[in-house]
Image (cartoon, rainbow, N blue to C red; front, side, top):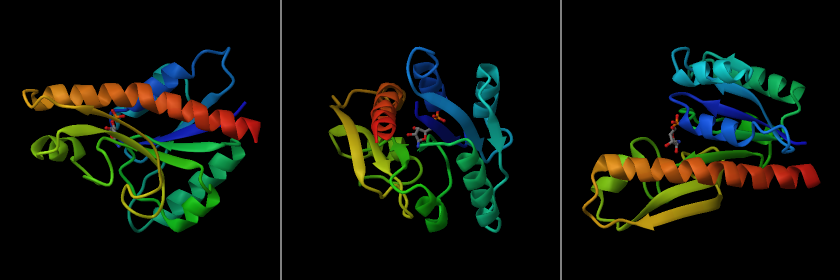
Length: 191
Ligand code: GRF
């Protein structure tokens, strides 16, 4: 069995889709913990409702090293194989990334390298791009800049509203992320 932790800062719909995908006791992997940096984040309630241990770690630019060292200690104690960022609004330091080499992934709601950072869906929508989508990548010290490991895209007609594009992108995220995480955990389990 391989174990993973989710880092999230907000609503947590991706956390929900991951929790749902891995709740079946018959499958070999486990969502073992949530890490959150915002006390009011709805994702904390979602973890509580599902009985998934949640760690609230207050975070600011000044105490980033303290947050990350505490997280590393907890993650090692839990024997976590994979760190899954799902709407985690912080850039991790080299120290943290080096603690889990090629074992930290992120999902981003655009076709990277286009539109890294915040408001990616709105910026994609406002562009002249016909092809929109979702990217999953390994995490490095940059902003949504690591090695791409999966993408899924679609062609828009141009008549969709922003709300429809948002719904389509989130729907892709909620099926693609569990599938990619499962594949990574299968490999971690086999290695
Ligand atoms: C998702 O769109 C994800 O791609 C981005 O942040 C959003 C998080 O949404 N990194 P949620 O909190 O999982 O609903």
